[in-house]
Amino acid sequence: MERVPILKLGDILIVSIQIDLDDQSVLALQEDLADMVVSSGARGVIIDITAVEIVDSFIGRMFSTIAAMTRMLDAETVVVGMRPAVAITLVELGLSLGGVRTALNLEKGVAMLEHVRGAAG
Amino acid sequence: MSAPRELPIATNGDVVVVRQQVRSLAAEIGLSLVDQTKIVTAASELARNALVHAGGGRVLIEVLEGGRRPGLRLVFSDDGPGIPDVDQALTEGWSTAGGLGLGLSGSRRLVDEFDLVSAPGEGTRVTVTKWAR
Amino acid sequence: MTVPAEAARRRIVDLFLSSEERLLQRWTQLSGASPGELRDLYQALRTALSSEDGDFADVRGLLAELSRARVRQGHTPSDTARLVFSLKEALYEVAEADGGPEALRGFVWFSRLVDDLGLYTFESYTAAREKIIIDQTEQLLELSTPVVKLWEGIVAVPLVGTLDSARTQVVMEKLLQTLVDTGSEHAVIDITGVPAVDTQVAQHLLKTVVAARLMGAECVISGIRPQIAHTIVTLGIEFGDIVTKASLADALSYALSRSGVEITGAARTRVAVRAERA
Image (cartoon, rainbow over all chains, first blue to last red; front, side, top):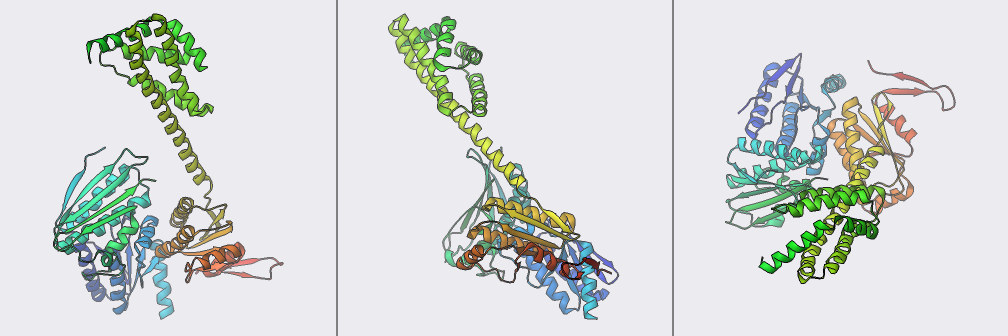
């Protein structure tokens, strides 16, 4: 099983998925992220999926779970860089990623987190 | 192009291998990027189904040639408990494994042809086909 | 093969090989093809018939080439097949002149061979024509899918003409890719130039809007004609919370305001635009 590295930048955690994730790694990432949000006191999480070629229902559910989980820990999650083919497939699959914020790229994801925080505080 | 090949589905890692094999063949026969993504996603759902519901199974991957356009056919089979009510299993949101219930109904929408054969105690066989446009 | 059949076959091949000039002249007359084309074909046939294994690959290659050329020149498939079939008539005259029973029996065998080659020509012709149609369809799809930038961060696809499912899909994929490439968070799909939509096309439009949303961008659909609005409602398609605007101008002004650009001044005065971004 491969572990996905989690980077910390200020009070944002950045996860860039570069490998073809198996289900075990997906679950591990969920746990690692929750631990890391608490230990680092991060206010935002960015999941970069620019390199991800497919998102099936299991990975899609991971996004929703992480978003709900981090929200409970007072951090917002943004999924960035979804490829058009992946988005079209998700729509066809019937997955709406409810409760997950998305942005076109990393830069816009960071801006979104700042905006959300600005509105909140 | 290539002979049909069979891959085992026994671990989470095998599901990843199935995805990668399907993707490389889909690209080889000239499926569009969107269609490649759709068939790989369907393969991922169906392989996981076999693993979760039947404890494992296998997939036969076959390139279809000779018609007007090439196609890719995947046959997922397992010797698990089978599905008592096939119609219900294909209903959106119906799930036994605590999932989203999109595995079967969702995969059906991602492919051009979908066929499911199952009976209690006799395992399940799902055949999906995607044609190049 | 029985001995007489073998002899008959040998006889007709001999006749075929020995009457080159006469055959070619008659064949040209009957088919109306150019003597050059037929001579090449004759040579290939001669090589195939004289060879031990009877390999007709070269003949078929020539025929396929000829069929492709004829498609481009606008000949009908019957014309093209007749070119091959007329060889039978030319050879029959030679066989009749010979008069022997072996020659006539051999002719039946030869005629079956020519039939096969004729059918092959027909198939090559159809395949060549189909390829042209497919190429043209693809070229048309390429042509008809402009995605234009309206403003920094706002792109639009003005759709014109009848939308079919394939075309809608291509346009939509291109739109989504443009969002990524340009980093645009707003897209306008303008269907002013679309006379009608069916259920499938409406579904594709909807799916595109949802897909764009998944990627982190917003779509506005503008220019829905009254008939199309009627169709969509009658078909029972849920447009849900998708933003629709009457005109492209309205959609642009909506997208501008959403992206933080403020337009000041009345319509007929000078328009001053100020970006609000920090």
